[in-house]
Amino acid sequence: MSNKKGRVFSGARPTGRQHLGNYLGAIRNYVALQDDYDCIYCVVDLHALTTLENTDKLREWTYEMALDWLAAGMDPEKGTIVFSQSHVPRVVELHLLLSVVTSRGWLTRLPTFKEKVRQQPDNVNYGLVGYPVLMASDITLYKADTVPVGVDQAPHLEFTREIVRRFNHHFGDVLVEPQAKHTDFPKVLGIDGQQKMSKSLNNHIEIAASPEEIERRVMQMVTDPSRRYRSDPGHPEVCNVFTLHGFFSPDQVAQIEDDCRSAAIGCVQCKRLFANNLADYFAPFRERRATLAADPDQVWDVLADGARRASRIATETMAEVKAAIGLP
Ligand code: SF4
Image 1 (cartoon, rainbow, N blue to C red):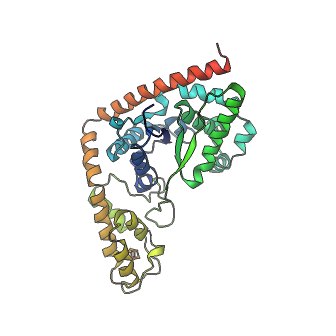
Image 2: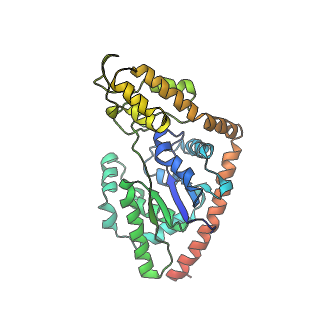
């Protein structure tokens, strides 16, 4: 390990092109953490199999997501490992070994499992039950001591910590118990202003969108519903455009608030300003993305190199785990 503060692990399911919610909720944190930590960022494609109806898009979504991650600033030159979960199959081996210290009842009582059962009652597969164990395997296989989590994700990490404690209690102090790094994961609403931004709800704005596409989507955004006429004073505190101005127009947000409340600015003008600021903010990103996309092999090479480096750590961990268990 380097002289950084520790080793971070985080993973995300392959969902293709990333949107503002992904960016504000995860990617910008991932990028910032690289300065202080050795970072391992994983496209968790095996996790995705538990809920996907078909797998046709897995390869494309992995590529598009990794492309966005790299263009946004995840940087192997800083020591960051970016890879696909399935490229390091040792995680499946560890998953099995951790499963024997994990109670089945414990897993099926988890609120996240019950939620999945509600969402896909016709496909309650074994992978869904073991999902938290695979997650624990991801983190512990790479000896990550730090996991960035939002407040509502803390119970997930606590589950991993519990599995580690059980394993270490049975077999000796082998696995690293990860600590939560509480990070600001704002809940980003979609253009409907109601629900969390999500591709499946088609209420998202892609970070790779062209300025024209950004403007088109921003113009569809729902604003303060009580502001029916241009002359009506607005209530920025209930307007999602205003919330997002906070991230992308920090120098103008105070003025926008005053102008909205006094009806000095109309929603169309306000949205146009937001669309321009958003397009400007992501202009360097779009440029880097276009350069990378011109040679798709670059992205696959980064993932392959990441898998090689991740495998080296995984092999060491598994040797220690097997020795501790007493497997010949
Ligand atoms: S003026 Fe801007 S902040 Fe105010 S309601 Fe309209 S879009 Fe929202």
